[in-house]
Length: 317
Image 1: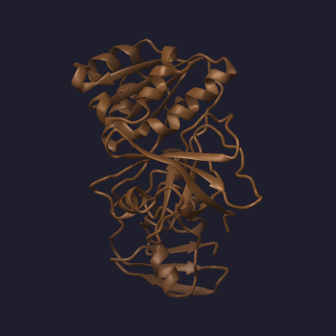
Image 2: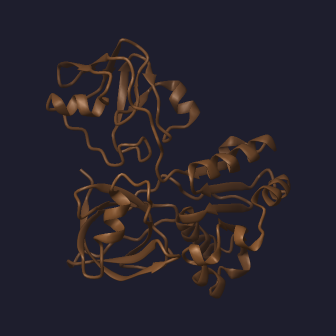
Image 3: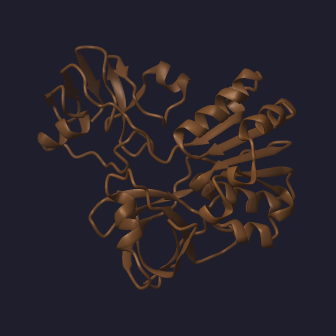
C-alpha cells in the first residue's frame, strides 16, 4: 500500500475566484518528502473520496506540499469537497508524491498550460530555472482575474520566461501556437496540461508539424471514460477465481465483489495505480495512462476502466 502522511492545511486562500490554493505540513515528526517537478499526490478528502492533485511549488521548498484546486462545476464530488471542506487547520491524509509527468533533459522545453493545468508546469518552470535550462512557459486562460498564480508569476523570477495568453486581452491561442510550434527545435520537448480539449488541440497541432510523439508530454486531470460494454470473464490466476464482469461494471468492481481488492485511486484510467499484468487475452484499453506502444503490447491493463476484447482475460492477480 502507498505510504500516507498526516498533514494539516495552512495558508489556504482563493485565487481567480474558484481556485483554492493551500499548503500541507506534516502533523508528526515525519517531514514530508522532497518533491519532483511534475509530481502529484493523492488527497484523502473529507467526504471519503481520493483525488489526485499536481504539486505546484518551487521544488526547493522543503516540508510542504502546495496545491491549487479548481472548484469544478462538473465535478463528481471531489473538487466540491476539496474546495468547500478543506480549510485552514483541516487535518487530512495524503500520499507520497508520484511522478507520471517527469521532466527529461532537452535542449529546450516549451510548457503550455490551460487554466488550472498550469499547476504542474509552474513546478517544472522553477526546476528548469534552477538548472539554468532553456525553457518558456505559456499560460492560457480566460482572463487574469479568473486565473490563479498570475501575480506570483508576474512578480517573481518566472516572469521573464512566461507569456500569458488571455482571451480577455485579445489573445489568439491558435494563431500564436501555430506559429510558435513551427519554430520549436525538433530536439526540444513540449509539456502540456489543461482541459482535455485544450491538450488534444496542442498535441494535434504539434503532430501536424511532424513533432516527434516521444517529445510531447501530457498530463490529464480527469477524463470522461466509457467503462461499459459486453460481458466477459476474468481469470484471477493467483487467486484461483473465474469472475464474470457484467456489462455495467468494471473489472475493478467485479474483482471487489469476489473479495479481490486491488489498490486504486482515480478510477478514470489516469493515475496507473490499479495496473495489473495480463497473462492471456486481449485488453480493450480505455485509459489515458499507457502510451500507444504500451497498449499495443497488451502486457498490462488498468482494471478501473478498461475491458476485454476477448471473451476471457487472464490476469496475474
